[in-house]
Length: 522
Image (cartoon, rainbow, N blue to C red; front, side, top):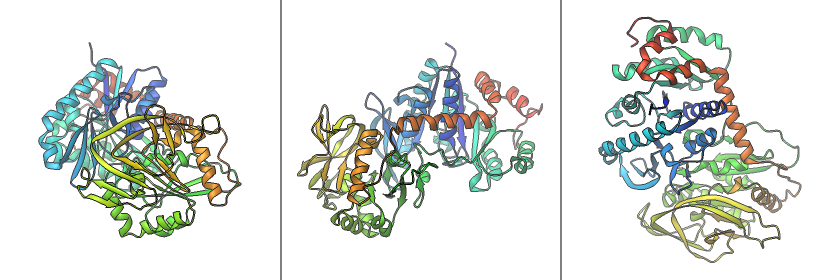
């Protein structure tokens, strides 16, 4: 069987726009009837999702799967690194826990992981017409090149052409493009087919002379200049996409009624930041990432999100005065929500000999719950309802759980009920917590919860948007990504690269650049 066409979208840096462009290409090809799959060999992200078989992959690859019309599959992201500190990460291989390793330990296991990556990519290329691969960080991290399995190491091993994306909104993109290519060794340079400029503001004609210079000096054309699009925000992967002070969400049409202000605390090791995006879908809800006590006190709702290091992030809350602010607002009847690690922080006691190794520590004491960390990781889907009598306003809830901490004692009224495993989470007055991610994508449940919050803060006239579907919002976002890519990227060139692969790179480069010489190095 002939291997499927493949293309790798690499970057000059993290958060350059790789995930967006891969999702856009996947949706655009799928709309044209192409059987396409996403692939990211190695991802470093604390934003993750579950596959149907209970495996764990990067959240961006789950979104890209949706773009393809596919369900999440562990093959789409065979190696996932979830950093718990600056030096160690929890490693997921083929969707399952592989262990906690330091940088030196991890790179020593390159051969084994390279074999896993090669096998999963080969499996996808056997099954699909096209595989759109996403690189990790920068393709020019030459200090890591010997152990690279996600960027040029993958491209060279699988003979895949590469597009390099740069974020021009940060400045210095022309130097980034030239320098990225110049740093690569000749065999890697030979696989770079062209460049893409992302997040450009203004008149493209002003950029044209610079792109002409880059083409003259590198032999590579720029295949697209994508305009800045601030409405594209669903399922952001990189932590750079959720900085303090940033309002989550795109432009929305306000109803003119009361608005709810939601403060999401930006923990140092925040995980699954995408949980608050469903709240931000509501036109009259403003969600902002914060890290100061005054913002916590002022908000209508405070969210403690997930964390890859719950005990360490709890220390951080206390050091910054945020813990006192959270407790004070809860005691004054202002709502607080904890999700996964945030739920654990709201408890009375945490016993953790797994993540932090600290043993027993005091939580914030806002929920009469005891948490104990287990070596075995909980990875499961959640399907059930909110804790009301069925038929008397109970809302259906679905989501997923990814955690080591377990509620071993719950003295509160449970908040949710899983259809298979029973009670989950806890609620005491205005304070609520759960291990369940994706909770607020259940539209009826989200509306019910926001109405409860509004009543608690005296905004009884607040009204969630009737009929709003987070699933529909996500689908519109994916279509917008596809429209952006097809409008501003040279899709004819993309199809030619997919058809020819790296085996015909000299011909492709000559056709793309008009340069008939054989030397395309800077």
